[in-house]
Image (cartoon, rainbow, N blue to C red; front, top):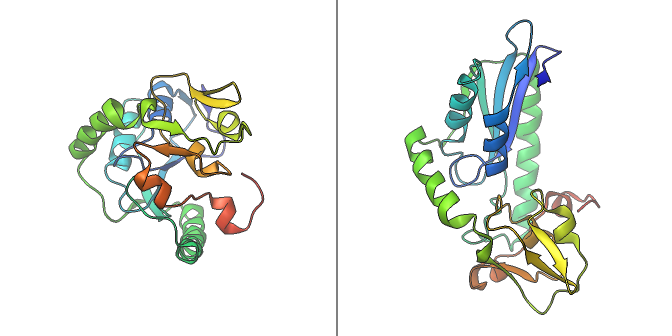
Length: 221
């Protein structure tokens, strides 16, 4: 159980398939909170095109725990789903992050004031997100969609950084050992040789790679 000590409880999550990443969804399903008085609770969703129904789904999951969200916010970031979206323009990405930093600074003020209400754009009804979740769970998250080319140098970065331990190195090559993952595409975006691809690779090979650190000038990967 998590004990809320400072009167605040927040969830910060990326948006996947108009909803929550599987690991966030699973976390909220299992979440147990302890507090003396109801904390100020908020959701912040990062998104590229829309937060979809992510905040509504999070709200429903928390209601099952007896906690209602007081506020919902969003921060627009580059959409890393390069199966569709093109991230090959570095200057465009840097400008996007600059705007995001401005939004984050504004958000800090709102959170310090315990602002209530829905401060979000481009949302969809919860039932739409539930339908999208079935597609996400049924097809998109399957690791059979991921492959590696001969450009791989066996650096092990993909396996080390996988948040759900779905990758193991075998004969100096990554092998997806779980049927599905959260499909963050972190392995694809971090690969120094861009050797990992989704589907037939036509889209993801052409649409570039993105990590926040790369375009924000930080060294961490």
